[in-house]
Length: 343
Image (cartoon, rainbow, N blue to C red):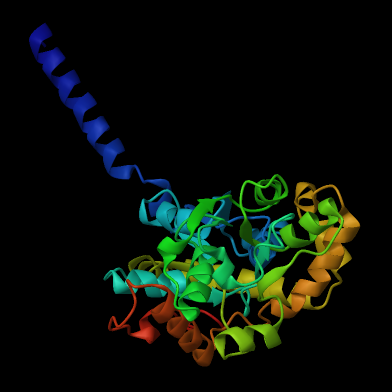
């Protein structure tokens, strides 16, 4: 065989191999079927409303289902949503309201397992600002911290403003993340008020040595009913793009099963036992306090992972008030969640 012919055949072989490799390459977010890795973006992993998905991972329940799951801490629900839409993650552990927001933008996203049935959000006043901020109206011209702009913490502030006939432009929003970064931002006075989620509220009050003034506290079903008119307001869920769920029903069912196992495990164990299973850094250096906060927060966890329809309707109503992009949009609520993967 002549040298030019050998070179040509070699070039064709290399080209074919490269083409085959390109066809077999998947982005992280596109994987999740047939043994592929499922990347779950979490909107602030230390936040207690997201504890069940981390607990499922720590207890090995995903592995029991034959799933290769990796959790990615994305420090805010809106960032976790963007990660999934951008293809860097497959599934999101975020707040249910994002599925409604995306339907208003003609993007089909569906919740398929509920972690928390109440939001657990707390709008509190920063230390030293109590005398000048006594009500929602006093936030005008102030800076309010949220996990990330567009996240559920941001929407909560918008909802409270709207109820007082105020506009989002009346305040400045600052993304302060979750956990220790949020606590530090409030403690140092970088914001005038902030929406925190446990254990950050308790950690902040421990640091400053006093109870903070609260303008909204959704850690208890009775308070949730006072604010939203419903004792059930589905908060953290697992959600994914509807196309992915249709194509990976088997994997979605396994994810849901693992999560429900973790919810039932949490229901039958103490805060101390749950805390012992979580990554040590989540306790912020105080495991006893962390365990106590978990005990207090357990009442907000789902027990069966199922979406209550009346709760979904309550979330939609708050979105219509807080989010102009939802407003009067035609929302088919049953397209935003499913219980089909839960036994």
